[in-house]
Length: 253
Image 1 (tube, helix red, strand yellow):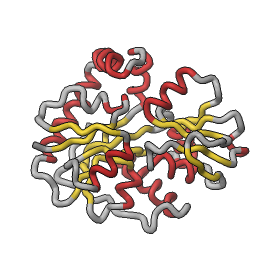
Image 2: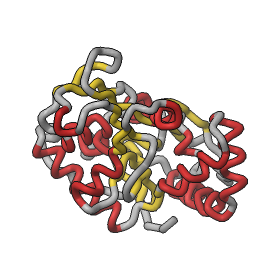
Image 3: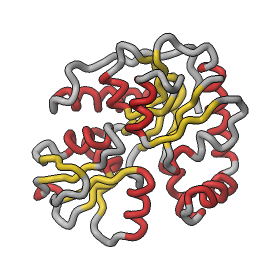
């Protein structure tokens, strides 16, 4: 049976809302899934987009799915009492590779330290960022909004990657995941209720969050992803800018 990775954050709720397919689910934070995919422990998974770039020679992309936003995303937050241009140090989460590199792109002069060490700002992602934005009055700077202001493009935080050789069931599974997102968009109230029961946030809060997320890997998302790769290369996080190598035929969410 095909092994499918699932990020353990609430942002996966629409993708897994109604999946009409058989699979073994492997759950973890983004950096866990990055490692498991590269180790051959899963057949496809949503991984940090920067990790695809670093290993593009041995990976393929599902052409229809990503995790992106065009503007604020809520679940990737830089938290600081200082103005952005005064931040000299950032304590970064160990759970995400893309967000750490994005912080370097947006604040190239800041030094990074591990989360928990003293710093001018801290970077949180996923449910920790949602909880912080919900509870902490300290100013929060949304990296999705900052990226849009910087480039005018969507920001692709995660892509669905497949190691070579490609599992023969990947395309059918992708179709099932696309249909699940469509079902979630058709039943937003039910999606929010089920996600609230699973993740513990108010349904209304999650409904607003899901409206900001995008899962279709269209032309603008691809343009935004390539821009991210180019800027990551400029700040020394990539040796070269990779091509986007896809599996199978394309569809849209």
